[in-house]
Image (cartoon, rainbow, N blue to C red; front, side, top):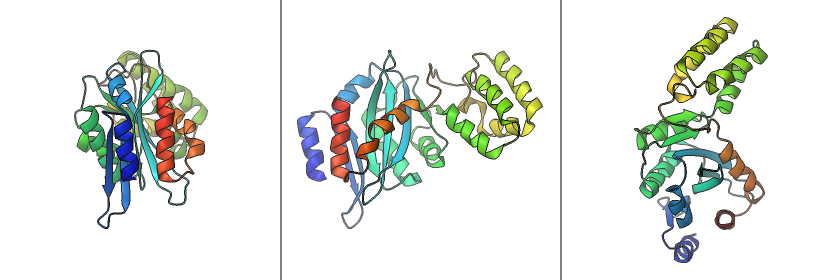
Length: 241
C-alpha cells in the first residue's frame, strides 16, 4: 500500500494520498485525490455529494466517495477512501482529509443520505457548510415509518421538496398535514433547511439527490471484489478515463 500511494503521487504530481494505520502498523484507512480532480474542482459546481458503498473482497471494508458536477452536469469524482466501515471515526477522518485538500469555498453545500455518521462528521469538520439530505433517501425513510396513504404522501412530498417558493411549500405542507400529520412532524424534526429547495441555505442548483454518487458506485460495482490495492488502481484508471 505505501509503495502504491508513493508511485501514484510520483506519476500524478500534486495528487494527495493519506494512509492511516493502527498501532501495530496494520492498514485502517487510505485516502486519494488525483491532481486533475483538484484542478477541476475550481471549474465545477459548489455542491458535493458523498456516499459509502460496501467492498466485497476477503477483508471487506467500505469505499467512501465525494463527487461534484461541472456546468454541463458531467460527474467529477473529487476524492475517495477505503475505510473499515461507515462509522463516526471513519467519516470524520475522511472529511478532515477532504477539507485539508480542497478547503472550503463560497456557496459550498454537502448532500448525502441520512446516515447518522455522515451528519455528525460534517457538523464537526464543516460546521459552516450547509448539509442537505437526498430527497429519495428521505422518502425511503418516510415509506418505512409511515405506511398509511403512501401514494398520496409521495406525490405531495416530492412537490414539497422541489418547491421553489415558501408560498408553494406551505401550500403543499397543508396538503400533507391533511393526509397524515405525523409525516409533517417528522419532516419538521429533520429541519426544513435540510431537505426542501425553498428553505435551503445554499444554492443546490438541480442537485436534489445523491444520484451522482450512485452513478460512481455503479461504475465501480464489478471491481469492489478486488483486493484493496487493485481496487484503488481501478478507481484511479476510472477517473483518468
